Image 1 (cartoon, rainbow, N blue to C red):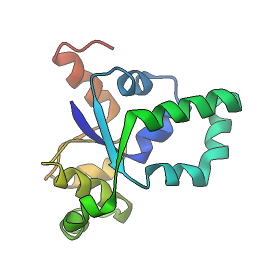
Image 2 (cartoon, rainbow, N blue to C red):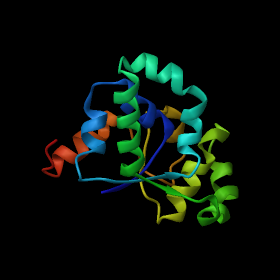
Image 3 (cartoon, rainbow, N blue to C red):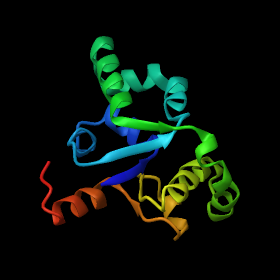
Length: 141
């Protein structure tokens, strides 16, 4: 299954101990994100590392594995969808994720941000919904 992943999922995968990491590293999903995804993390990296409870080396290794698991897409690949996406969302931070999803034949978005559900052009899964969806398709994590 292919999905656009947003920063809320990235942050959760670094801080949490739940199913998020299981889904990301399951080998059953292909994840895409705008190229700036990890730039957002850099702004808060030290705080996120503290919240994770991981040693610096463990955190850095997890981060490197996440970078391998998520394919970053250059803005020019979805630039022509930005105006349309911007008109669909109230939180302008969500625009690039929606534009990317639209540019990839309306790939679903995986996000725990409820603002994404204000638009109806692209399916949005939160983590619980995605877990349930994968399970209904016989995918065990």
